[in-house]
Length: 302
Ligand code: CP
Ligand code: NVA
Image (cartoon, rainbow, N blue to C red; front, side, top):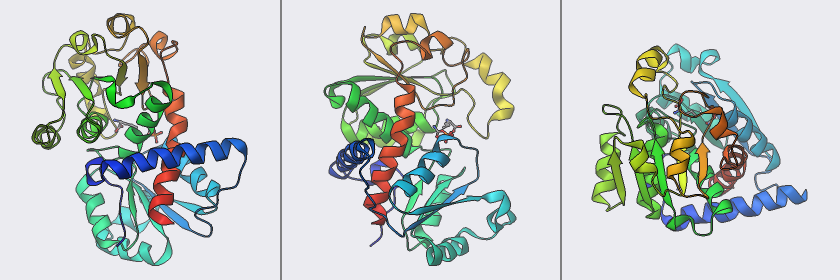
């Protein structure tokens, strides 16, 4: 049976921890210059319906380092953009490639693609989740903090795909998470309800300073995600006060780390000083996309 990577809560804690271990091993081997062609001769199809810098580069480079090959397929230049059904695309791609990474709008669309594919499908971001990013971020916390499951995590900003993914991570790993959003921009109700049912330790608030108090990890993301560009002006007003800045950092633990999946809008959700400060680990997160995704691909496609 093939397996997909669509949402953190589809996997077991043991499997997710296995990904951290494999990623750390592959990272060490890459740094030592040792070959690790776990996917020799294999091919990944990368479908993009939204823009990307990190996701595209890290998946493509990752496949190369694993001895395989990756194809960039933008929806605008394939028949997908002209309405070819997902279930047909899935079965056609399954005849050519060994795995699919997709970045798109609808999580349901990704689930449909996975249902009709006989090969593994990896979620490279939807409006609902960004599971590869949260795994890269947790790998980064593991590198910077002693016990990642005992840290206090704080999310400040939009209740978007990254916030939903952090809630799923709190469900899986059991750490304390505080989520501060403006009213009307809370995380997805389905995600919140699942977390409640599974007994996750999550506090929801509209007060960023209260959320940040004593926190070990501060995390944020853009106020307007891809697809919400026309809401930008309205959101800048709604998110007033939800910026990670000196005041928020001062409220957190003195050795807190500051995370952002990037790209960042300096001066909006985070100040330039904050992202350049000693607390910031944003480029470690970006690098770890490569290592965790190699672990995900090797686990699913070998
Ligand atoms: N963080 C992230 O997914 O970046 P890209 O949009 O550049 O891929
Ligand atoms: N929330 C952002 C993340 C980008 C990596 C978006 O969906 O645009």
